[in-house]
Image 1 (cartoon, chains in turn yellow, green):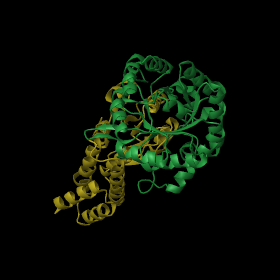
Image 2 (tube, chains in turn brown, purple; image 1 turned 135 degrees about the vertical axis):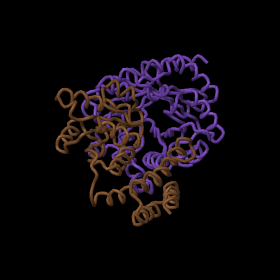
Image 3 (cartoon, chains in turn blue, purple; image 1 turned 90 degrees about the vertical axis):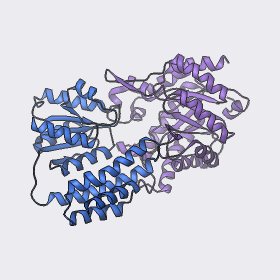
Image 4 (cartoon, chains in turn orange, purple; image 1 turned 60 degrees about the vertical axis):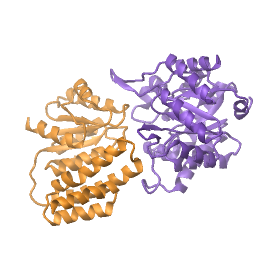
Length: 213
Length: 296
């Protein structure tokens, strides 16, 4: 029964069908399927398929946007269900896209996946300054600060965050994870970030490792 | 100055300028950082003049204004939409002052950064008004050409072309889209292929059509050839200097002036009428391209 919902969820995301996706998310939760399973086994394979086809030139931004919008709707539904009831707290994470960068989709998926994995997450949105990352981390008592940069011109903000954390003596207090299309492990090594996330699910894995350390 | 389109009709190949953003970053990094390149139009038009002078001295026949992100929708990302008129007027005046009729002033007009419905939330009417507001200023300020560039959405670029033509039917409009190479051929990120671009840009009233940015100059020869199959309009190609790699925290573009100059000869052979540069190209690239093409 779960398998059938997962398969239909995947198809709905590939089609960019927001209504059917939302309906399937509700149905799945009603039937007692864990939110994280719905996301990981149903909807994520769908959006990954769309991502692959986008990379191959089989489909284009219009289709990707419709699928990402459908995905966002599903994630909101699943998150809402998970915020009620007992939470298994894995750790506290703040995430944001760096200052000067207005891209949002990848980071938003990372926020959702982290929440689905039992983290407490504060999403700072996009165009977030170094100072604000640090202020919010202090206020939220975060374990991890995650930054996303989609532009070569804004990657420097990730470096500045590392420098500022060092200056303020906060480098050990918060672990840092960086991501975004032009970002690499090499960049993480160079600037001294604690981890590099290749994509949203890799980000979850890396953040789990960081908080266990 | 002889009208641009007359010179092209006679078979002349014209040279356009190269990248603006990277030169501005080099000269005014602190002013631009965390903001948009157009902010310097408000405070340091002298830098705009300096960049225009560099490209004029490098032999460019067409010099672009620093107005790529100058439409109010784009400026609204930086809460600068109220400065639309000043930003655009100053940019045209700065280039005009330097070129003194020795080159054409081309008003750059890039994407709004917003998506039309249903993918985004902008109505076509609002998009049209957006371009109308920017382009009215640049045309009134004395731009010789409007260059709508780096577009990926056929509907958006069409609205920009129509806005320019509604203000001044006689001002030449250059319209370029940015294509990615896929296993199925060249497409913009929104899925527009070259045939569709050629047909629709021409139908919208563009005078010169083509491609800019992209993945380097070698692909541009293929793109230009394909355009030629579907249009009799003059073609413009403004390639970037390849895809940037990060070295020592700086974006480094792989294609040298010599390499791009050599490849420009192929563009000329295909029948491209205007050759210039995009991201990563410098006055040295433009000088080399100009020398190569003019020696033919």
